[in-house]
Amino acid sequence: MIMKFTRDESIKFFKEHNKDEMYFRHALAVEAAMKHFAVHYGEDEELWSRVGLLHDIDWETTQSVEAGHPLKGGEMLREAGYDEEFIRAVLAHGWDFSGVAPITRMEKTLFAIDELTGFVTAVALVRPSRSLRDLEVKSVKKKWKDKGFARGVDRAVIERGGELMGERLEWLIENTIAALLPIEGELGLGNPA
Image (cartoon, rainbow, N blue to C red; front, side):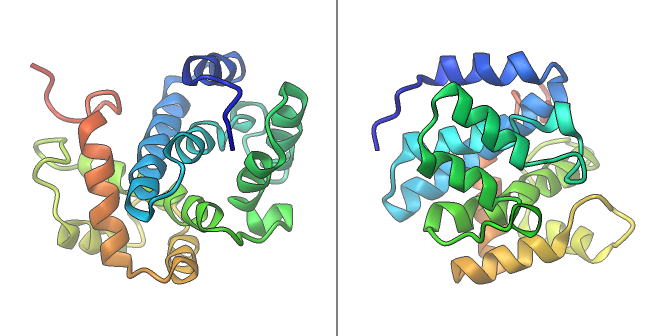
């Protein structure tokens, strides 16, 4: 598929609907992870990363599935002229609420890593270094077991996504760390020089 919107146009579109920097950082994290996994699987990096960037286009408006997330996002993307394949992936990341099951590799990956990027970032933030550079899979797994940590992250969704992808949780964590490391400064992580 040929993307008809540039990254800059997509960022502008996102920022028109989401003013909170925290939401933009999450969008950047999911964008980076989707690009990483697209490269790994030999898929369309531009498409995958753009879907990652805009998957929560409606979040600041809706704030919850009860208020229409991600269905509202699908409507916003359709009105803006995004392709149906693109929109379907966004809807599939909210499978339980949209009723659109993730079928393609891109949809399954987005479903699995959306919340995982937030969890990995949360683990990095509580470390003394506040960095991904020294973050190991075992540290993430240790926090995974602590149900009081990052309560808002639905671990079952991530596990289910990994199963859909046919990948082990440890592998997903390792690759998500690797994907986010190059942009950790943009995510508010690490110690800026």
